[in-house]
Length: 338
Ligand code: NAD
Ligand code: LMR
View (spheres, rainbow, N blue to C red):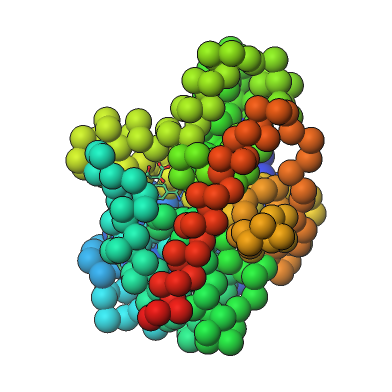
């Protein structure tokens, strides 16, 4: 699925890259970190990226020097802590994995106190220096950091909801891998749409919409849903205090970035779940939601409805919405008070 799709898309986009998307400068903010380093490596290998701007409060020039020796055409520049504005000059896409990761026993919301202000300040710099950039938020808690970025840009008068994305691709990657394991199938054939948000019960996999997933019932179904919702905990526990998912996240982040670049370069039919400003549950006071989104030249082209779902998925969604609402409101309140 995603992996193979990404490889195929990468091959197709070699043609696109020479025409439509000639100058695509991508910045990674937090490039020295556990996600930032492998993400920078993968983006250096993306033919749709012509220039890579790596920024961190620690270590970005070293990562840039290292990555810049890879024999692909894109240019790479590293920027130290006091060079954020320079790092953002002329960027079209900004990927943000800056911030602290979880340790065992923590929820993503426990990261709010540290990461909210990091993301707020980075978003303000993007709004000032590169107001038309597309912003891809990886920093947790995504359910709150995306509303934070949006509210900061709104305050600056430069908010375009088509250009702000929460990266939920890791949930999609996990769902395909875990379902593929159970079904004895290639994950390329077990792609699952995952909707809602990015933490625990707010992660809602729509297994009923897949050929291999719709027949799964009972304990196997419950365990699979739990594993998709709490896959992050597995990694946090296994890393035993050394952080959370970095390599699979870098893969997921590069996959989503590549999908967006394909859309921006004019390719049609690029559709993937992502957490965006969304009308789907606005009537319930929830104005950010992840569902399948078509990506196009302006970013969000079309937000797809969730489609037909099973009774079990209705229950999962009912559990998701109140948590998601709280997370979104917390992010908005933080910016309002800032
Ligand atoms: P890490 O600690 O290894 O790296 C974070 C980096 O951010 C560090 O290099 C640090 O110097 C940098 N940083 C801190 N403040 C900064 C600032 N103001 N400007 C620029 N850089 C700054 O952490 P990690 O494992 O890479 O995780 C980063 C974030 O990504 C965490 O919040 C984690 O929870 C989140 N994450 C999200 C997903 C997802 O699916 N969206 C998956 C995995 C991790
Ligand atoms: C994940 O899903 O792996 C990330 O959100 C990191 C975490 O804290 O689990």
